[in-house]
Length: 141
Image (cartoon, rainbow, N blue to C red; front, side, top):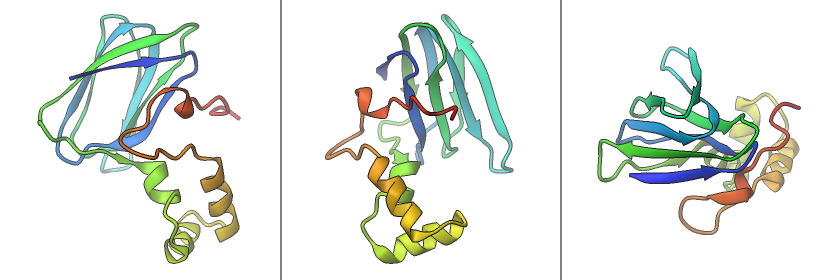
């Protein structure tokens, strides 16, 4: 179990837990939570205080604070070792030129744009990132 606090406009970016299902309960605030199914269907819901949302094991998901103030969630996994894979970090943060070429082709862009995206990411030095570095104030632009 864990507690996650979101500032206004705070984002827990797209990630997945390969070894666990996750459930969140909103303690305060209003968030949009969602995931992408294996059939590429986007499932999302506006959740508020007292509501819960479940992310099935292995699916890409996120939480985004859309309320006027801070938000807090309590989360739990059905595994002691859920694992975590941060999508943006995994796709764009590798220093390998060869992977950049693969990512550029997959996203139908240039290697230069992949490097530019990498430069804008707040890369963690250790562990799971948290706090202001993950606020995405330009999400809607």
